[in-house]
Length: 311
Image (cartoon, rainbow, N blue to C red; front, side, top):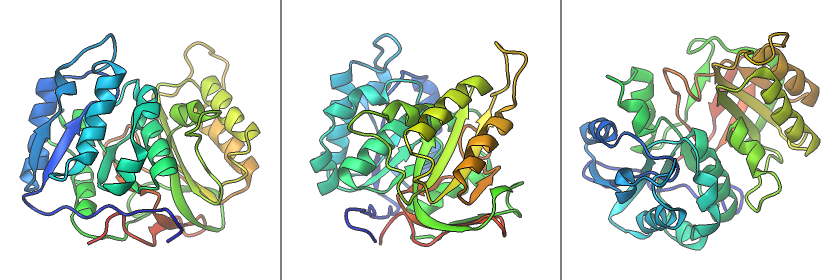
């Protein structure tokens, strides 16, 4: 494992986990109902104060949200931190996090979408492997999909994940084989890290991309920004997740989202698989960011070479 990458300890039945809202405010009652999923896994749940707060479109003021996340990492009784929802606001608290304390108290950190900014920040500043997985708000809408539920299993024992064409309609945008650590997440948030101290590092990485509700011309703008910043050419390969509701609205004469993505990924010339159920999708395939994997564009497989947790 390259210097600085830390795997958090695995969970076991009876462990306490925290639920916090580092971005937008959400449906507290729905998230409380969804916490039953974690309890069925044998976990005890501690609900953060931020789930009851509202500050404009945020779950409390920046200092309050950051303090709660810092406190959960510092608390020895809490073995994992699950984000209640995304929305907007994670990037605002990145300068307020105690990355030395996070590094000294490694534990599972789980979320996606707007949480991508925190994945990038924690990965870069604390060297911790984190998890791109369905949040509590995603579990509040009826019984979760079996594949979504299965993703939590990787937190209880070291597992080498694999996804192939038998699991999803994968397509190779670029053939060949690539090895690297997984980085990335939501495209909008990745673009927003550029020029900040938490800028996404794609050098030699397999880069995951997903998004929701962005028209093709907006995807084009963000991918062009990443390309011109050298982030696409620096990557070892790509995993293209779900791009839900990304059809044209404002500009009727348009490329499709798939055409825009293919243009930039093929120009980068790195092995790339598309069609993975990762992102704002049902099911949601959860993956460890920072863990080493192999992407085979010819076979149509993504195989992790190390687990996200340690015994």
